[in-house]
Image (tube, rainbow over all chains, first blue to last red; front, side, top):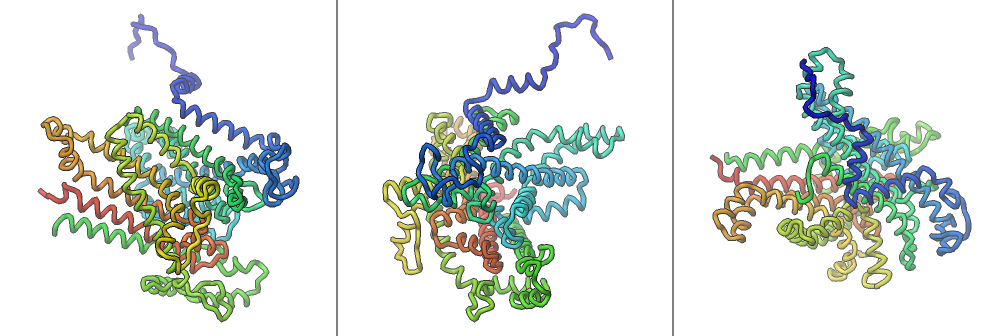
Length: 294
Length: 323
């Protein structure tokens, strides 16, 4: 290899990851900023819930169905618990459960997808056909049916949704991994005699990560909305756990009396999914090189 | 054989296979439970005799394959067996008789939503595409991105709060019964139908916009414009023949989405449809009702997607004029 003794121009050092993030943030549109700030606020709420909430998660602080007052900013619920405190604890429970479910679904779907792309053959065919059949049933309907079979509990909810969502993740990760598997760098790693683990984690995964991260945001929104819908229908997260979906269901009768009580938890759900969508939209534009107007 | 006919038949065959596979999944969901459904429902304290008696009552003591063929055979003739509730008593509740009126209500609601949403979103989507990057397009884009992300019940309760509670234009609950006159039914189903319209219109508009922009970027459209063909002829003769497939896909995709959205919306408005029935049956673990509802939802979903595929094959100009 030749090295020039006198460089034509000084070569700048490679930008660090931190610098890259800073440069990207500078060009982020307003909607993405809005989304990121909202997500940050939700995260703070979820992590520091016991410090932020004025009362405990299932602490009964007064009479049922109280209007807003200095003690209870958003009033109390059907058995006299503070609505604001339950909203704050709800952030921790609802987001936490959705996050665990999505991570589990990516772990299952992602690893099966990469494995199917790498091994091909009968294994790939077998998993793909089963997944195809599952894709033909809407997730909410299938989740409802499975909850009827196994009975409603938190563990069942997480496992059922993670498995159903994994079929969707499998499709995408298999597709992007297939594109990566046929590349020369994978071929040369094989010829070098690298092991399976090296090929997967050092060659394939770094290359398929950007589309998977975008998908993670979208799948999280979907799982979060599905869990909220199931809880709203009374078969998801069960009381006394504070959760936004069931809070909407518990306070829905109040709306006929002109009180917007079910709107607070519903708005909490809507705001988070809108925020995540804004950030994902920006990320999508960045990674696919698309500009506005396409 | 004409290539169009062959492709359509292939697609139909695949659809039937998918339907069969899905029916097997729905049926076998009951068998997947480790330890068995009867043991799970009765709890650990149940004696083997009670479990056996319970199984016999439900007909679960016979082999699964026999029960599957009996179930699917009867289901094809519109008979879904009898419900688990009230089974031990003298009152045997027929699942099909419970489902039939509710199925009508649900299709009434879905059809109403579709009739409003489909023309409106195609129009808005086409306008957003034709006047791309205008203020209209920008506003529509951010509004739809926002509504897509919202849960159905949030939109529903905002509508209830504004139109039923504050303005008193509609009832907050959409109770209808078999004797409800048609016009009254329309009025009572209006608020849930508007909710579902808002939910799917955003998806549909964005997909229509993307499809039309994609189409207008094709070289043959540019060629037609360069030839000096009038604007309406470009759309009618050059763009439209190729646009049917994406439009059909967009419509079917969103009607399939309606199938899912209807469950939550029916519960919000206490509308006596099949979605509400399924949710109630899930809570009481009444499996024949749950499986019948799941089969109907899944079959509708599959048939709609199949219909979209067939429309896009039949209208595909490349297949219609084989070389």
